[in-house]
Length: 325
Ligand SMILES: Nc1nc2c(ncn2[C@@H]2O[C@H](COP(=O)(O)OP(=O)(O)OP(=O)(O)O)[C@@H](O)[C@H]2O)c(=O)[nH]1
Ligand SMILES: [Mg+2]
Image (cartoon, helix red, strand yellow):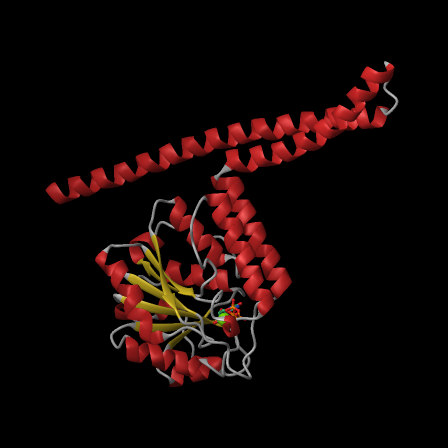
């Protein structure tokens, strides 16, 4: 029987390493994933977060030795947030339930986090070279998303959508995650980097889902939502870049129209294309508004960053006082 997180024994809520497995109808694979991770990490707590699967996944997970936690709200992002909010751990291992990631590599991801070399280790799939591991459409979708993100944020990551990661508990407590669904991986990676935490990519082999198990990812809907998440994060974390790029594009359109109107005027002394003249002027005006918005939002961001930095200092002061008291 599945138990709500608040009823977990204290020892399980405060364990050192916690394996978090989001699961929605994965009866074909969940048992194997649980037993593989229990074998790889005998002392860790293995928790399966289930959104009311209808195929008996919860029973299979329990039979394999996991504690199953029923989450009321649907979505992988929501489930991860639920886990991070309610389960305290020094280190979180997050892994998909579809048996596509190798449990025997978990030590390679945990060690750099425990050593302090990074705050999040990502099991980076070699899906660009391993051609048969992922559907061609998804391979190109991944490539598009990774390139767009690297270009926008100046990063050099290889796999931002991996479902296999190890996170330090200290970092998790400082990550404000909001994504409800599959955008959570993008959000995790960017929030981590933007808050000054370090990400390390560890190459891992990736397997196809076995026959009989079904993907929960909808290629176009989720691909679109992931791209929108990158745009939203760009708007919020790099407002100057976002709004300047927008203003630049609109200015270009306005200038093209403006040049046509102006050359008519120089040639004939008349403005025969009045609608184009009005449109061009409005586009340039709109571009200026976006440009100023960039300035305003980045000034607001700076104030918030200062406030956050000061609140952190206050916490450390208190800690120092507590230690000397
Ligand atoms: N609890 C819960 N788990 C979910 C939900 N959606 C997906 N998952 C789990 O999240 C993991 C990743 O989902 P997948 O469908 O494998 O998505 P993916 O790995 O990006 O796509 P594939 O490459 O097709 O496997 C799996 O373990 C799913 O069972 C959800 O709404 N609730
Ligand atoms: Mg998968």
